[in-house]
Image (tube, rainbow, N blue to C red):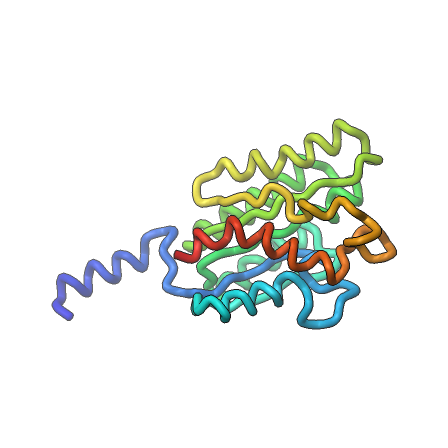
Length: 202
């Protein structure tokens, strides 16, 4: 390699948005942490299987924790990025904030900060949109869903509009608590993510 080529290669490594890693980091809550499911059957595990079957050469690191909030994710993210250097961050947080009725501006600020931290590390962001039950009031539910669309307007962010799209039959697709998707739902959740993730893998 000539000296000039080496210089340009090193410059490319320093450009934000570039990552030589093929790691995918999933930062989520119980929806991604296989809550109530047999290990290895959640949508994140199914994603790893699909990547292997498709010879994408990517590895999934699942850093999801049941009960996680955006504040907790924001605290953990810098170390996770430093440790795994992912090419893509799949950000699945906010649901627990909504279920606890936490401040929407605070939730949005936490998500925005995480997006900024990831982008500064040269990591692209796939944001998984969520919704809250209507019993929180139509205004809160509307503003909660709109929050993800607003965040996705930032450059370098791709949005999955609603992770749980297609799971309208609660009895068929949810565990008895009617909050956590069951094993039957996981393939549908993966397809919701895959439609927006696949183009980012090229």
